[in-house]
Image 1 (cartoon, rainbow, N blue to C red):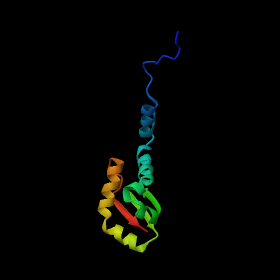
Image 2: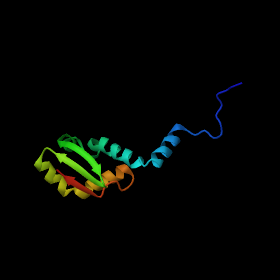
Image 3: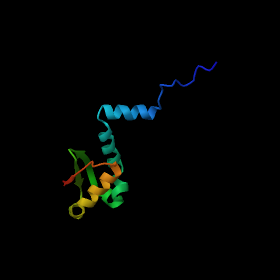
Image 4: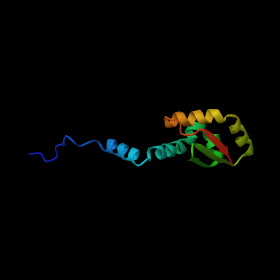
Length: 100
C-alpha cells in the first residue's frame, strides 16, 4: 500500500502560508517588501541608483535621494509614483510620499 496518499483535509503549502500571513497581519508587510524590491523596475535604473533609502510607514513612502535635482523632479511626479506603487501592490499601499 501507498502510505503517501493525500488526506482530504490537506492543503497546498502556498494556501497555508497565505492564511497564516493574513491571520498574523503580515500580508501588507510582504507587499511593502515586494514594492521596495521592485523599486528599480518601477522607476528605472536612473532613479533607483539615486535612491539611498526607501521605506514605507503608515501609508507613506519615505525616500532618501542623493540628488537634489532628482528629488525635485520626483516631487513633481508624486501622484504617478503613488499610482505605480499601488498598482504593483494590488491595493492602496501608500497615499503620500516624503522626500528626504
